[in-house]
Every structure is written in structure tokens, then in C-alpha cells.
Image (cartoon, rainbow over all chains, first blue to last red):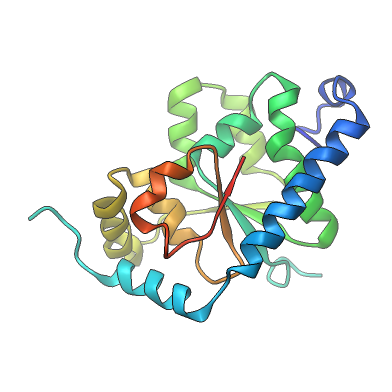
Length: 56
Length: 133
């Protein structure tokens, strides 16, 4: 399921080892991103989106 | 597990969409495999409708965009009337409406923006979570 249409031919061009490597890299990045989660950041984000940042 | 129970763990921005529809499978798997990994966990991806439109405007691959829009493990987040103030705020910070849409959609601590251009989000680096592909 590497491409949106689950293109079997395209997938066949990429080794299972390479796909596993990509997944492992993503898992590490996801874990790192999850580790930085905090309610403060979520609140700051929402606060930013409620402000007027227009040029006027 | 219903759609509502399947959490959104990543938000694809325009650059992530462009990588996923890249004809080169070595590039396409950089997004395709993470989507598959999350699907195995019972999670989903989201993609703002503006990012789909921007990706299509850049490369014109209608079929590929349609496949993402209909993907069983994803959801396209539409524009709602009430979204305009947040989109305007995001646009004011990031200078592009598609980036602003990803910022707005990545609501909650569990959703991370997936992008090939993390530097585009520098103005809000402390307020969002980015996964670079």
C-alpha cells in the first residue's frame, strides 16, 4: 500500500527491506513527536489561531 | 472500530501529497508506508482539501489525487464556514493558505503534520508538531 492506489507493480519495484526501513524511520519520528506532546503547546496553538494576524 | 474511533495521527500537507503521488516508488513509499503503518494500528491520516487542490494545481495528476481523496485509511477535511478566522490567522503567520489549512487541521496533541518542507512552519515551530519526510 505504498501508493494511493495500492499499485502492485510500483510496490514490486521497492524491496520489502526498504519498505520496512521506511516504516522504522517513521516510527522513530512519530515516537519523538509524541514525546514532545504537551497541553501547553496545544493551548498555544489554539491561542494563535484565535488571534488576528491579518496585515491590516 | 468505527471511523470516529480511528484517531487521526498525521496530517498530510501539500508537499507530502506530492511525494505520495510521485511516479518514483522510492519517493512514494516515504508517505505511503507511514500511512500503511498507521492503518495497521487502526489510525488514519487527514489531508486538508486545500492541500489536495494545491497539489493538483502543481502536477495535474487527477487520478492520483482522486485516489487519495477516496483512500480507505484517510479523511479529507473540508472547509467549513466557521473555519475562516483560524484559516486567516494561519495564513497571516505562514503566508500560504494550504499551510494554514494543515495547521488548523492538526488539532489536538496526537496529530502531527507530515511535510517535506518543515522550514515553512518556522513561524509556529513551538506550537505544532512536524514529521519531516
